[in-house]
Length: 309
Image 1 (cartoon, one colour):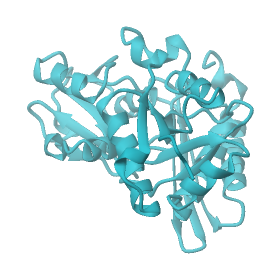
Image 2 (cartoon, helix red, strand yellow):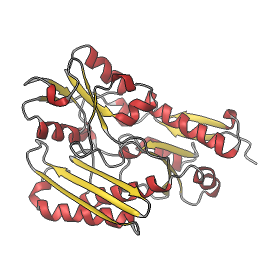
Image 3 (cartoon, helix red, strand yellow):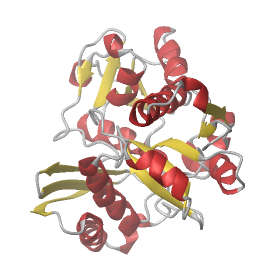
Image 4 (tube, one colour):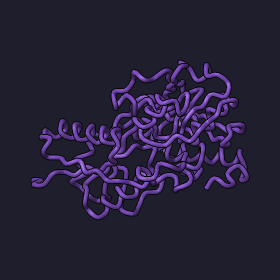
């Protein structure tokens, strides 16, 4: 019998808290427990504290997870809740991704002050984004636009947009939906034109390897198809040594026992693109992703990655 609250570690942004609250609600429902059985523990991360520089300049992936993982390892929290796209492909010793919630719509959302579509923006319009993937894809589609670094949480970016700092921005549709902000979306960008980040739209739970109590708690929340899709996408990233410094896109879709995957790497200016697509039986989803990543690494050649890491 658990006598102290089950502690859920998270970042402190409105979106991160919404995700932690979703996990708590699902755990309450799955186990017939009251809200008081759980405690949400907010942990500040370097990525939250440093907002005046691009992520690529201060360390890439891991910026939003390191301090939370330290709290998990030393027992200050029982599980950690993350956005899957923030997770490095190599986790600290002793930790594992133990569950993935069912994925939300992974598409990117275009939000314009005066235009309803990315393609409708006037020449030279300013588009804000902190993601190298989004920056590269924007430049690929509209090389005439001015792409500017745009850090901050969802609400901060929307305020900057309203204040005229930029003419448009792009955010994950999943995050906007979780915050109840669907009304700000001007256009949902189709995945065949604007491929999302690996892991986008999926909440994951990280826990200590061998912690059977936590494992039993979160196992009921795991969504099979999302877990398989993320295994493929993370395998793809691992083969490319993907980080926040690399414009990499990828999406796996599971239908029954079949897996469809589309992956892409771009030069930061969007002028060079290598992509790959495959459909296969779901046997080892991670291996499918790794093989597709290796294909792109070979196709691009070693010089393509110079200066990325």
